[in-house]
Image (cartoon, rainbow, N blue to C red; front, side, top):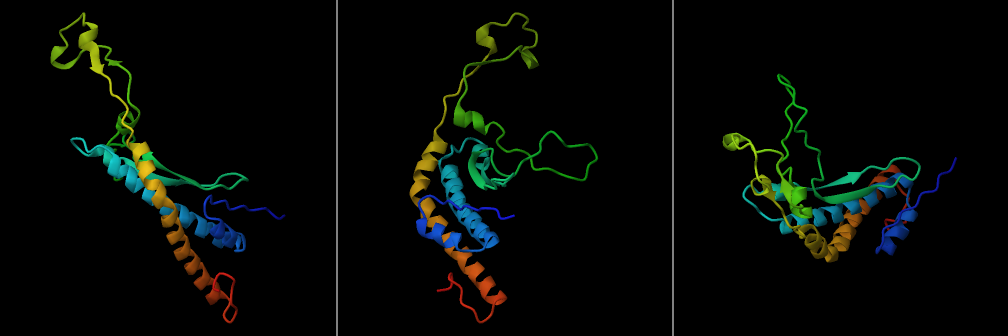
Length: 193
C-alpha cells in the first residue's frame, strides 16, 4: 500500500520542493526541525512581552511543544503560549512517593492573558469568618483586564520566524545529506549539489 505524503511549509516554496524529493523519514525530520526553529523564536518573543509580576511566574509559564501526528493524516503541529510545554503535575503527588514533580510556577497565567470578569467568593473565611451576611462588596475579589502580550509577541516574532526556520532547515538538510552520503558512498544525491 502506497501512502501519499504532503509537506506544506507556507512561505518556503524552495524548501518544500526539496523536501518533496527526499525520502519520507528524512523529509519529516527536516520539516520538524524547521518547525522547531520557528517555534523557539515565537516562544522567546512571547516570553519577552509577558509581564514580569512579583514572582515572574507568568514569564516562566510561557512554553512551546509539538503536537504529535495521530491518525491517517499524520500532521505534526506546534504551539506556543501560556501554560504550554512540559506538563506540570501539581495534584498527583502521593505521600512517600520518590517521584517529585515540578510545581506549576504561574498556574494562573492564562487569567493574565485572557482577563476575567468580576469574580466573587462564595463566603468569607480566615480571620473574617465571623461575618455571616457578607455584602457583595465584601465578596468581590476583583476583575482583570486582558493583557495582549501573546499577540504582541506573535507580531514581533513574525519577521524572525521564516529566517529561523530556513536556518534550521539548512542545518537539518546538511545533516541528512551527510547521513545519505555515508549510507551510499560514491553516489551524489540531489541535496548535496
